[in-house]
Length: 272
DNA sequence: AAGTAGTCCTGAGTGC
DNA sequence: TGCACTCAGGACTACT
Image 1 (cartoon, chains in turn green, red, orange):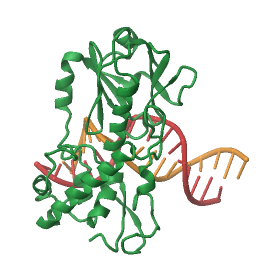
Image 2: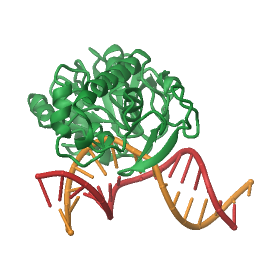
Image 3: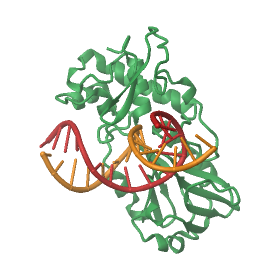
């Protein structure tokens, strides 16, 4: 499930593989993947357009073309892969044929992902309208900000970290890992986080995301970079997916419990 | 108004 | 081995 580091790598991969290329033809295999314009009109609409510079906002990918802009979300199992024509990934929903004889495949096994198409003049407005909070690796994500959004909230700190309207880009994996790093119990409610604990949480979130960016993201489930390579961050997880494993900090056994529908992994020994 | 349930999907996991 | 069943999970909508 791609989170901020994985989405960033897809954006970097798109810019390496597709920027400046021209879309020769478009195929739509699963029309509901496309929103904003009629899917059957997409080939005629996008053919001939040159691909601009992709950027990321939260877990969204914004891809400007000449006359239209794409707002993409990979959700859980989405992939954007560049390959030769004959090497098509499973569950491909949209194909861009490029002028270098390769293709960009937009694939998604669970069909949760979407490609929203807007006129290029509306792309910035569409981005601004995304219901997203601050970027967790940006200047705005400060201990003071986190303290403000936690104040008076009975929801768990982990749930708050994962709320895209408050902080954009953190999912289940990095919320679990960041809270382990900070030594904070993921089930503790936001309004019971002490003033001195916010800097540690903010520091941990930044550290875990920056480490993941440096490792090219984590490849679990279906995540791949645009060039098909895997990230290696999954090899550095301490708690996520490590139920019944041993905490390297205190030797307690890692546990898993659902919180608001999502599996929380944490160490009861040293996360208080 | 904040929080919960339902929805979309299908591969993977479980039980028999 | 295989079938039937359950479930995860990001973000959105519809309730309470």
